[in-house]
Length: 160
Image (cartoon, helix red, strand yellow):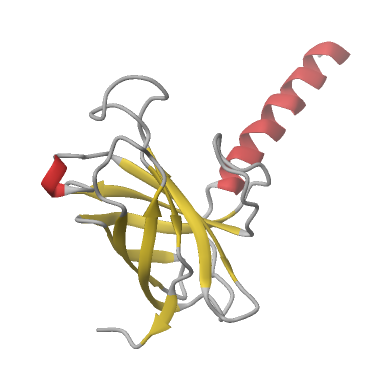
């Protein structure tokens, strides 16, 4: 095998490994485990709602359940933040919650998205801070655009 081929194989193998590692759900720190509730301040100007209710349950095994607005999180998991915030974010966090969304995000306005990404961090005050953005496009109408909001820090509450 030539040196060039060997280097190419090693680079491809490393890239595949790095992608797989970034997507491996992890056991979050104990401070993050539990049920969190609060609101998110809507950041897009094409939605009439100004706030959405947020309820997240982060489990010890890295699974995450809950609701954002009117949508239910489906197959949610928490991952280490790969280092670079998603496009549109300036917030740097240690962890990211990713999930599919079941149902409309804002039912009253017919706003529905398929997926959500929620970078999160526990603050010094013991609250869960972060933001979220959904699947969608940068341009288009309210039926296509990415929906984003900033979490008003969520408070840990007893699970319901």
